[in-house]
Image 1 (tube, rainbow, N blue to C red):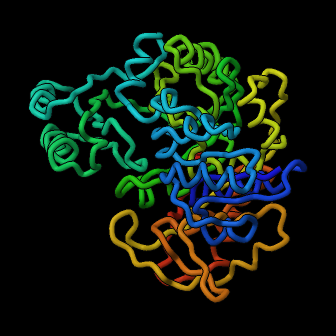
Image 2 (cartoon, rainbow, N blue to C red; image 1 turned 135 degrees about the vertical axis):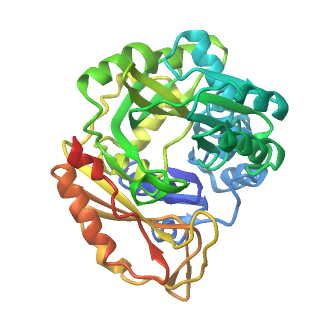
Length: 423
């Protein structure tokens, strides 16, 4: 079987490493990929949003299965284009990917079908949003409606901050067209947990839990990023929480999408807040989280191709989804200054230390390779993941492994998984 993965980040590298383990797969391609993915797959210089080029390449190369890793092509309708050409593809169609593509849509869906979430209002007019904030309770959360690379959420402690946030999102278009509409949401307190799931339109099977760290600096300070590290499983995701979510959130979401004529096949990422009033949905994503994939997929026992094919074929109910009884921690090595201003083109050394080590992984995100040398080529450069018998061991090993790698302006948070100590 020939497989094409669409995307270029650490998530796609994690997917590629899982695909490589499948006995069904002979050849892996990735569009556009990155330097790390290029070590195990053939990278092709086609952008993730070049739908016709992806379709034509898949047909010419006789690709048997396409995995769309990124949000933009899913929301843009790449799956529809490939399916129309008779190419078997994993991921939701455009009308289902709106679950991530529009926060206003997802909030309205949850309200309509009684899925627990924060109270909210949707706005398409900056003046009306500002007027609403005059009598709002603080802190409060502002969310750009569309895709914003995981950065379109502002937590505002005062009215002044919130009014500035409205200006930034809706008038200054800090996040581009993603800010044409905006959700204003009550601020929820509690532990944040991520739960990824496979869906075939009817059946949903959840993976092991994880917890991301979005802020750039230690102690959850600094700007929102695409994610600075993660751990799995979350000690706060108890059997009681799981039972509540299965009864009130997971299947209800799949059924709600089907009832709306938006059958969802692929990955639903549930961003949950464990509030004093019980678990509530913070957000949905329509694909693997990044860096959540880097701690969840290394712990999955199943053949990923078999699971994904079951999602496409509608036979997920026949799959026994299993995960290792251990833990994993991922620490992102970034370019100092991320997510705002940072330099690229710094030589990376020490990557060979990960060769032939079963419990250690180095997932490439922003890298390139020239004349046999790896260089930094983005804000998030590498995701260093380690598995251990428990979270504390995995965390210790992951941080030890971050010291094997060197590049100028290397930056990382030093408290990924620190919450483990409080569990």
